[in-house]
Image (cartoon, rainbow, N blue to C red):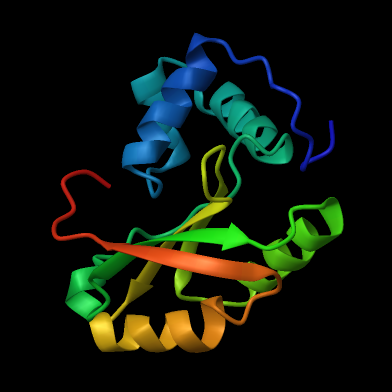
Length: 154
């Protein structure tokens, strides 16, 4: 199966347990993972490899405390496009990929077209990102911003 395939991968209870553990501790050793899952090391390692190769596990990454590095301002930006034909959507999507402050981008079934999660150092920086980057993306007709006051659950 191709890595970028959107077909669902069949998972058993061992696979699901591996994923649950890795979600909490991505740095766990294969030996410790195998013990917690109830498998020996070799089958656990084979399952882990298959989960990576099939794209179930997309990457291993560090979870950064953004507040500790001065990036704790979060804004959610609704974006309405002037054109929603396939070519316009692709152009907008490609533009979003080039803006590092946009952490997430979701196409929405609503009165607007996209919802962006934008992370910056403060409201002034957000205003610059909105005015110079997001508003300049292809086919943006309007935006609306909601500033997060507190993150309850990440």
